Image (cartoon, rainbow, N blue to C red; front, top):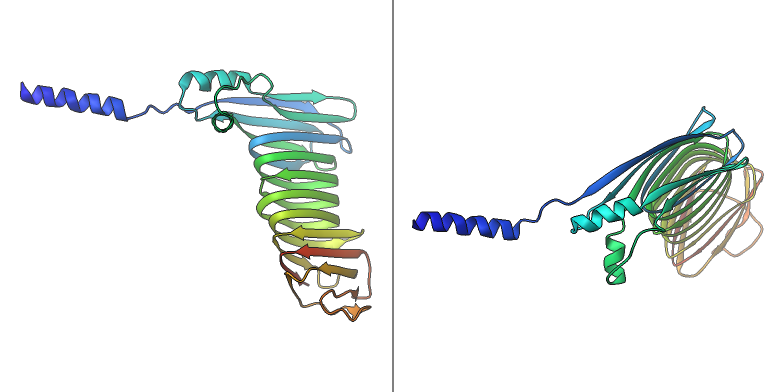
Length: 276
């Protein structure tokens, strides 16, 4: 009898202390036509994004929506209320993480923790105009040609194999990288460490960074016009030898390999390393 009582007590303790796994998820899949040269807009909040260029004239969207709320009922309702919204027009396709119907209760911090995450896998035509508005979503982008605008907040990004006009605003982007870039690049970064590899420059470019480190490399035979504006709180190191126009050793400027597109580097409270 004593053994039976002990077993029952142990069972009750286990029931009381072990929480059931309540993570829930649902999937979204849609494919829509999009001609090369048109536009793609993505607005994503909380989750991840993988966006890749391909040779088809259509956009394939796959998304996984999930929540790990401790309340099974809340998780179910949150998943039902969270959707991926796809809008098509003659000029562009727009994809948006839609939380408009999500009912919020409790303290703000608690509500945010229970907001479902959306993880995107998207493929789109290579030659395209892109605009990404990304918040709290780790992002990977590769294989596109065109005008590309990235607005990133608290989102680390890995960009590769892009050609065209690349414009980036990034705040608290962790360790972010831009590899094999051809064309022009304009980056404004705050509290972010950058790795930038420029295969070729064919237009005016600018790298502006505050409270972060930048490691920039250019092709060995690339000609460009270097201009720098570096605060006293910035360390600068380079192996390129410009034909100096100024005696200001802290802010070197001049022609590299005979000159070419202008490359401006502005930095405060960090370090910049420029290599060929």
